Image (cartoon, rainbow, N blue to C red; front, side):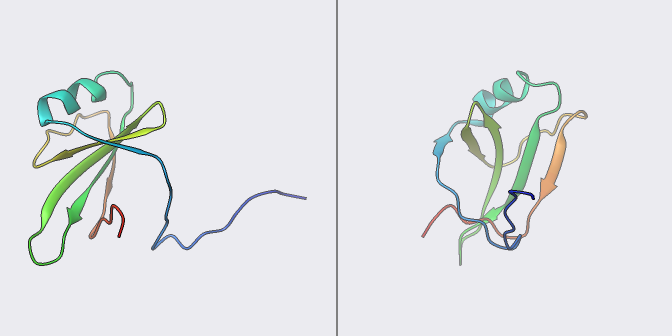
Length: 85
């Protein structure tokens, strides 16, 4: 008997710590992992903002704008990001 959980992949709501940093600081977090997971997408309604995110020790690290993606990164592109209501 498994103890997994199924969720709708189009919308997942989770709690946690969100940390916004400048792109230079964001790059330092990427250097801490061999294969960082990067989530890239846009948020906002009328005025779109490009966001790049990664995780570190349970926190979601977020930066606004363009970030150079390392070759060893696992990249997830999204069409629309939501950081809450």
